[in-house]
View (cartoon, one colour):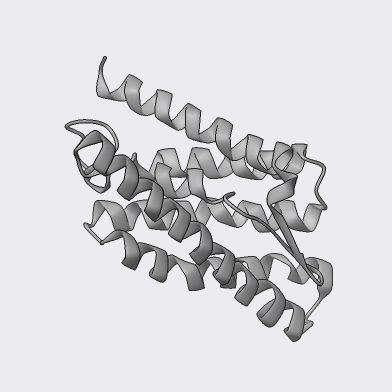
Length: 174
């Protein structure tokens, strides 16, 4: 099978997971005050970064749609839309050869800031809600899902006997 088709299939698989997680895995939702996070919702996005920037964007759009279809409040959907930018930036860092851990650490504050900005139309300039609740909460959630994704990448790499951080598709040039 050609690499373009394989990449499309993996992108579709990760997109399906990104849609399904917020809809059917509500038991993974963490609620701390006004902050909510669905554990593992970033995993398909982290994995798609190893396909291409376009794949990461498509999967992140799927994630946004999953939160919308899941009937979550529109503010949560707006926050999920920030995954599009974070996924793209992460995939560009992958292409530039950054190590996985560094990608998670670099994109965490970007993710937090973007989600903090996303809540301004809903909560105004409530600094506590923007910075402490949303930005810091999003960064912690990002790092937790980054850890889960890292364990998954490492485990799959070991099982398949090849480093998936060099490309999920065999012979893929990142």
